[in-house]
Length: 421
Image 1 (tube, helix red, strand yellow):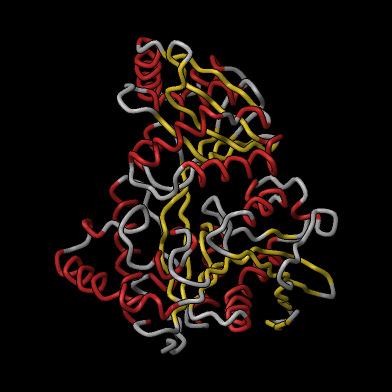
Image 2 (cartoon, rainbow, N blue to C red; image 1 turned 120 degrees about the vertical axis):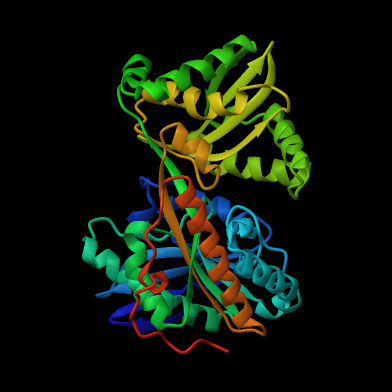
């Protein structure tokens, strides 16, 4: 176990196979955020496209935070947690069509060149966990300033962890707006490049019944809700809600396999079944599945993971050609069940911004910091700058602009560290 020291904060990479437990560290025992739960981390370990290691952060002789490190040995890891693939890949985190013409041309040049340099960026490590969340779990009772100090230490601690693991690239991913500014200063001084990765849709729910919830909405949202629910009902759809391990059945697996095939997503039945088996076995008691059924046949589902007063959307699948199924089940039927079962908030993840805003979600920006040391590192940094700009444009267009972190502001005057070569 190796230790590094940053402003009195010590970081330890735990040995291979070692894992923090809820018994040893209260921060991962029944937390408010499902992605910081020891059970979710056990699920993360069961995926086969990366290796999970853990960073233990200590101050004053005690453990004050722990975080998973997703280690990818070679190209082919999970896109959202694979730093070299995230840089320069169009999709939810890069919309090059929104760039000005010269930037679009440069993007095309860069993305043509990047694949040839990608292999030299591995091994790679990301400080993150599934769910588009940074995954840093703090010890209970820590003050805002103490937590901020830990977050500010992470870029250097991650750099040292990358050295220990023999990595050619590192990234700290999906940090929220409140913590991002503190991270950015230390990350910039350490030579990282900041990028806006998107924004998470979060819906806060009012009232303790469906009637109270609907009454709390603006007139425009009430009109939209009633129309979409009417379309859903007129199509013959009905909602069935199941929870616990048995909520994930063979129908869910089959629909998810078909959904992924329709959109050209990787992984066939074996991978989908393994994923669902892992969720069921590690987090079964927290599973809530909303199903849209037509004459007893499954037409769509959303799988949520529940903490006492919050739902976190994990995955979904929908049969083609059923009008209104996705929007109504995901936003309106979810809200109906949630307010009647003590849920005050729903986290929906990234992308689909227009749909989320129109149905009452707030968008919370998510930032990442990347460091590349292999061949073509300068091209990766430039690609990140362009894709961050494109996501800033997207959020501007939907009316939810993200305030850039200091290193991304035009008037930024902080001295920057010399970039790695």
